Length: 177
Image 1 (cartoon, rainbow, N blue to C red):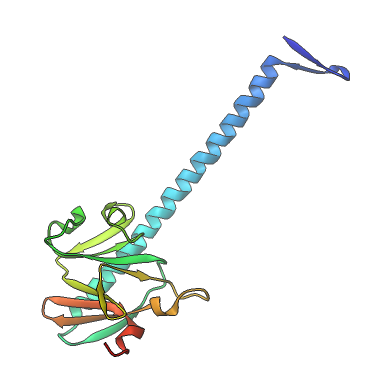
Image 2: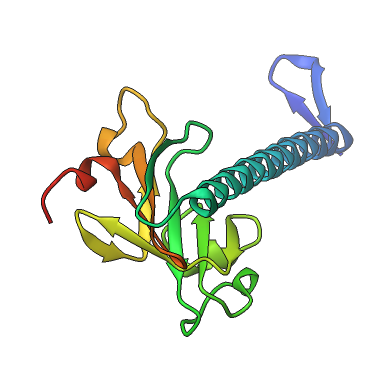
């Protein structure tokens, strides 16, 4: 089947040429989609590795503190992630293994903390998170930048008792409670 253009014989398109173009466009779209998925997957894996490093560092600092001692902490490797705490009696991510734990999650919801790609947890950590003096389940951490809420870029780590820790915003620690 031939379609003739208005200009004459040189503008003839065959069904075969049209189908070749359509298939080529579909292949290019598929390759772009696949490339985007691979890039996203690699970026997700890098963020998870960074989050694992941050949670390991926080746990190491907390474990090294004496009762009543505090330390300020600033992280610049992850942005807009959330510290989360879960009690042993609560529904908690499987990584907590039924114990109280501290997690670092991409979002402030249970699903993000439970997903192995967007949450990293350390079991056996009885931690109280504080925001403006109030106990909370999630505490956002921001990377220091021009647009960041500076209050959320610096946190303090404390050991309240031999087996209880506290984490909150450094600026809140200096306010009367």
